[in-house]
Length: 154
Image: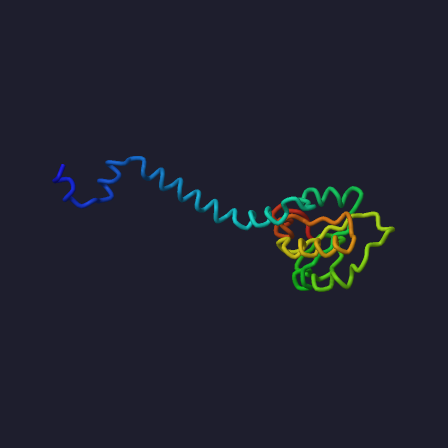
């Protein structure tokens, strides 16, 4: 037994003594990659928890049905690269000036969209504080819209 302690540890000897080690290493590697891929979605999920959010499929169904006013909060360059058909372009900086108070005659919902949904949640807080109801956020923003292969207009 003492002779084994003086011998150097090699990869071959480790694999011989612990044949399950490559499987464990592979599983840990897969978990790390999964965590790194999921981090951006986790942030979106946390922002949307308990808030009025719509998935791209829900938004598309809403647009085909009763209708909604989609408000794109991205800058002009991002808006020109592709947007949801029929949306209103109001850069985030202009939301406070454009939506001062709710219109009592308005019958359709507002859906706020930006690239990742971070600005949309901030605009949602502003609009709700001003008395707007029926305001939603596209969960995951335009990144989610493109990932779901939904149509874009230029």
